[in-house]
Image: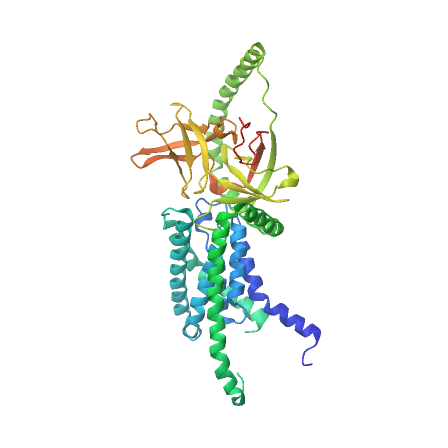
Length: 170
Length: 289
């Protein structure tokens, strides 16, 4: 008996932080901003969160967790089921495979890595929507969304570092 | 890190764990693809599940959308303050013009009333409105929907028209207990039977995930002009005829583009309209119409 019940509960609660924060990102990403043309290109905050936690706490951002979050996003956004689930699972897998590179690298490389991941995500998203709709859709809005997400990465990343330090003490 | 004594266990466990990880990845990818198929085939049960999930998260979405709306309003009022003088001038001019229209409308209304009396026209079913606030947008490039704060207990039904300010913006596709989802005109899955106001040409308005929708099935030599108004035709019985939809903005080889009369990006509140039309279940039944 090394930890009391409360200690274990506290630890479990803290370990939930990556999941909770990512779900929050799903919800915040859906806030309607009354700006012309914003909604289709709103930054994909969820992807940033999954990227961050897979690099820093892969034990708390498992494929299953990514899948559940993606599924929740599919349900809430009203798009076809499974697209975001697939997107996040593939992202988690790709980042996990290159995790050593990211962990040792500087912020610039981290941003570069995210740009690559985002590019892959844009193409994957576009492909799945095109296949599901049975028509070649325009990839441009998704590209702009990707650019905005990369632009939002430093700010959101900073926020995630704060959460990381506050709940999982670094 | 574990100590050296358990090295053999680690050596054995590492490949196993890698295998399990890879397997779970494949499994989840397959599950995602299976879900896409299920969503295509079993769309009714998926919709009801979706409505339930949206219901569960609606209070949170409602709470976090309020500060954003307030912030936007503060910014907007600052901008409006700057333009107050010009805006005032414009509104005065518009008010003068609208007063003339009001006179015309009153005259037409009384004329219409007396003509109806002469012809014994059955009165149209009474229309009830449900006001709702927008609490979420999809935040995706490929989906154009809105989530609003009104559901079954407020009287929302699937298929109801959603209006905002100047005209039609979409229809209800999914109803939860206290939230529902609106498919906007510009979504790639949206189809609205319309008629061109001047040339009386019937057509289908179809979204393609851009800001403007396009008209389908127009004859190649139809006399469509830029600036022509597009209204619902009432075909199919889902919407009543005559709701303003948008304005033709471009006529070219690649098709006719229509700009919705409401700015779909800035909708904060909307009205869901129950016309009492018998096609709410979207099933083509013989007695509808």
